[in-house]
Image (tube, rainbow over all chains, first blue to last red):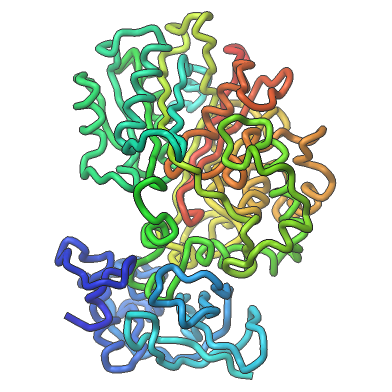
Length: 152
Length: 405
């Protein structure tokens, strides 16, 4: 199993539940391509082969045409901050050394909304509408995950 | 399609029960708390438990796992109902048990229905840790280190940005909720005294822009709840029936980020973080009830943060979208003279027993003139709104104490 997927997200402990967690903490067929991309340091999203619209990795039917055939395509890695929150109380000890950190929803250039970490510019506050660029960083107990750096 | 108005006042709540478990009381499980409440509600209804044709429960509570929760309840009550099922729409499902019971008795499928919920989770598990793993997408949100406030904060930040809402506008809601809580014997914050806007603004930041006093407080221990429902024409006046006048429900997503991936729906439900499924749920309930927001005397909501209370006031129709800040600033929910809102203190100050039915039971007790806290005088109609996090699924029930209303 992929190293980013074999922990119990709630506890930061090894996941023992096995296939019982498929679709929740474990990739299911509709999200497996996304996690394959993460292993290679690439951010993959779905593109509908019918209408060409880009889709969130979980979607089973296209948000544009309800089609069910997708290709995994690499996102440009650019977008803007749609909303965000800076977290001052960690959910589990594994995140405490990162406090405070910012999480939020990015609107990718492709029109897909993605939840991620947001890395502020040094000494500046994050703001809605700010432009972002994809990077990867070590995140809590979960290894290297996508994050978005604010670009001026 | 048949008119939904056939359900208007067709069913009535004839008993309620609340089993409070304090921190210093003998530690009991969520299963026990719900069962004690069920026994009590059946006794107060003055019926034999074998008259219960239907039992509606919610999904299993936190801190006590059963894969088939409803079957555990039915088994321990030692009854054999014809209809028994879980209404699983998260926290909204707690209120929707009443709606489903109303449909079953109106249709003549059963004479009496029992609805129960409740949780003693805070006595057994770390709720801060566990709750985020229930309310967030385990693949696409939780790995980034989210807490429950950090999930709701995404709505709060965008909502405050789009409508220029200030933290001090939201703080008024925390202040007013506390004003009600200090009168209620079971409220978690009963003994904490009133708070000021300044207290809220100076409380600890949890996840910007949400501070400690913008947030619900976990209930000190746990509570179990139950109600019994029958057909309106089967209710006796000594049971002090409270009629179910209208109801509605709506679900927009399971996880936060998915709220931004809706399509092909009515304009207010297009991808955004400022309007919730409370709006279509309430619209449906008002239509069934033949009522409008100005006909409502009391409003109770289960939303757990100040901003979400303001959003609920808008979505439930008590002010226009974006005007909640003026409504609140101008005394719209003032303890003295405003719309009675969260009359037990709400999630912020009564507290949050997970899977609580307390906001509905508060409405029922108010309409019976049996409020345990501050009684609202001459109240005839109440609206209860429950949601399942994060603002994902919504249920609305309008109730009245006069059958003919």
